[in-house]
Amino acid sequence: MFKLHRAWLVAAVTFVALVGAAGFRATPGVLMNPLHDEFGWSMGTISAAVSVNLALYGLTSPFAAALMERFGIRRVVSVALLVVAAGSGLTVFMTASWELILCWGVLVGLGTGSMALAFVATVTSAWFVKHRGIVTGVLTAGSAAGQLVFLPALASIAGSVGWRIAALTVAGAALVVVPLVAWLLRDRPEDIGLLAYGASKPQPRPEITVSAGRRAIDVLFQAARTRNFWLLAAGFAICGATTNGLVGTHFIPAAMDHGMGETAAASLLALVGVFDIAGTIFSGWLTDRLDSRVLLGAYYGLRGLSLFALPSLFAGTTQPSMLVFIVFYGLDWVATVPPTVALCRRYYGTAGPIVFGWVFASHQVGAAFAAVAAGIVRDQLGNYDLAWYIAGLLSCAAAVLSLLMLAGRRRTPTPEPALAA
Image 1 (cartoon, rainbow, N blue to C red):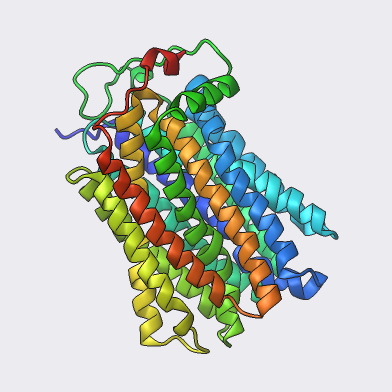
Image 2: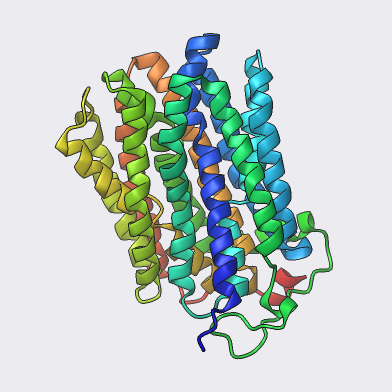
C-alpha cells in the first residue's frame, strides 16, 4: 500500500503559510489610494511604510532562519502569524502616518519576514534530498498564490466597505493559519523517526553553540569573504527592486494614473501570480537539471526587456499588449528563487539557508529602496515612466552579475566548521 512521506505534508502546510505571508505583505499596495484619500498622506509618505515593511521582510529572514535552526520551524512560524495579526488589526485605530509605519511597516514586516523565502530554504534543506529544486519552486509559488488569493478580494473589500475591513480580514486570515501550523508542521524528519525524502541516512543536525543572532551574524561574516556571495546579493537586490518594490507596490497606482479601476489593476497584478506559479515550478524543474547561474542570467535579462516596454502598455482598459506583459512578467516574477537557493546550498553547505536569508535580505533592501524611490518619482514627475526604465537597466545589470559567477571556481571554499559553530 502506498504511503505518503511526511515531507509532503510538511511542504503542504509550508505552502499555506507562504500563501498567507505573501498576501499579508502585498496588501499595502491595495491600501495606498484609500489611505491617500482619507488621510491626505502623500504617496511618498505611504511608500515609506511599505519600504520599512519590505526592508524588515528581508532583514528578518536570516535571523528567522537561525531561530528556526535553534527553536524549530513550528514555533517561529506560529509566533510570526500572531505578530502579523496584531500589526494588521491595530491599523484600524491609526490616525497618524507614524502608526502606519509601526503597524504595516514594523509588525507586519517582522511577521512576514519570519515566513519569507529563507523559510523555504530551511524546510527543503531539512525535509528533502530528492526533488529539492522543484519543491523549492512549488513553495516559492506560494508567494504568487498569496497575491492571487488576496489582492482582488482585498481590493474589492477596500473599495466597497473600506480599507479597515480589508485590514481586519488580513488579521483574521493570519489567526486562522496558526492552529494548522501548530498541529501539522514539524521541524525535522529525524525528530519523528524518519529520513528526509530521498535520503539514505539521517542528516546531521548543525551544532549550535551560540545564540540565533550570533549564528546569523557569524554566517554573514564567513559568506561575505567570498566573491559569489556579493554577486548573488547584488543580483537579488535588483530582483527585489524590480518585483516587490516597484511592480508589486506601484503597479496598481500606476495603472490608476492611466484611468484603470483599482479592482481591474489588482486583478492584473493577481494574474501575474497565476503565471508565476507555473513559471516558478518550471524554474525549479530546470534548476534540478541546468546550471543555475545561466538560468539567473536569462531570467534577469528577459525581465529587463519587458520593463522597457511597460510604460507604453498602460491604458484605461486592459489591452492585449498588457496581457502579454502580465503573462511574460508573471512567468519570470520569482523564477529566480530556485536557482538562487540552489547556489547558496551549493556554495555554503549546511549554512545555505541562513546565507540565503542574507541574500534575500538584500532582495528586500532593494525592494524597500525602489518602493520609496518610485513614490518620489511619481510625486515629482507626475508619472512612473522613469522608474520603469531604470528598473529595466538594473535588470540587465543583474544578468551580467549572474553570469560573472561562471568565471569563478565550481565551489567557493567556505570552512564548514566555522559556519556550524
